Image (cartoon, rainbow, N blue to C red; front, side, top):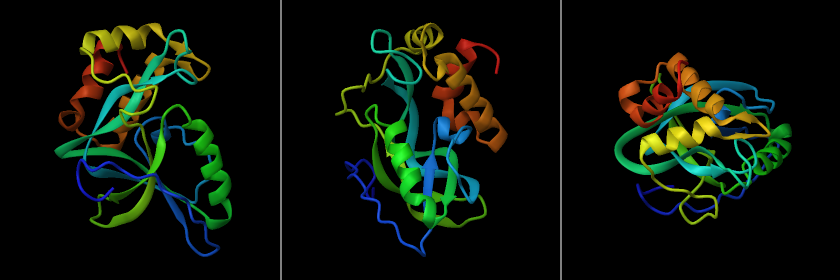
Length: 194
C-alpha cells in the first residue's frame, strides 16, 4: 500500500513453513479476532482514518436494512489505531480462509506497515480494506444519519450499536486518543454510553 492515497492492490497470501503471518485489525478484529494467534500487540497505520462508510448486510445488518461498519480512508497526517496479530505458519492458511469469509462483504486483502508503540514496525501485515468501488460502500453521511442507522440496525452478529460501542471501548483501553479518532468517538457518544 506504498504511497498514501494510492489504490491498494489485493495481496496474495504466501504461506511458508518458517514465516509468521501478521494481521492488522481496526474494526471488530480489535476486540474479537475469533482466530488462533500466537501474539497480539496494539499498533497503528499512518495516513489512514477510520470511517463508518461500509454497509454490513451479513454481520451488523441485513440486506434490507444494512448496518454500518468501518473501513479506512486516506488521510494525510492521520493514524489509525488497531491490533496486530501474529499467526503461526501452520495456521496461516486456515486463518486467512476464515477471514476471507468473514470479510467477504466488500473487503479485500492489502499489505500495510504497522507501527508499534515501542518504535518498531511490522512490514507487510495483512489488512482488510473496503474501497469505494465495492458494492457495499455507502460513503460519507451526516453523523446524525449514521447514528440513527447504527441504532436501528441488527444482524446475525448482533446490534450495530454494540459494534460501535465495543470498538470505542477497546480503543480507549489501548490508549488511542479520542482526538485522533473523532469520527468513532463522536458516533459512540451519539449512540450511548460505552
